Image 1: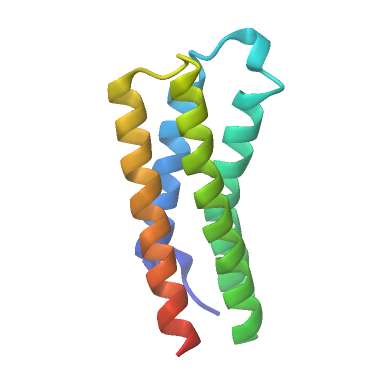
Image 2: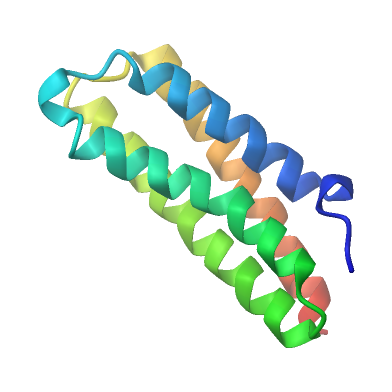
Length: 117
């Protein structure tokens, strides 16, 4: 069984979740079941799928869960831009979240490429 805590992708995804939760507390209450919920679920999906993939014994399952995590990271990237365009995130907060999200996505993509070789 793989140790997810040793993966840079997990570390970044975990940091992203905490940032998303911190910044979405300021979203309008009308978004509680909309963008707030969707952004939080997508962000939490990233490290959750990394953990689940690491717990799988088959290499194919590991890659599949990492691929799902990567898709969720890209989803978060888009949702951050929507939140910013709607005025729910300041320029600074949006840039911080985007940077963490993009870095997470890139590291996951690199990990996936190396595993597929």
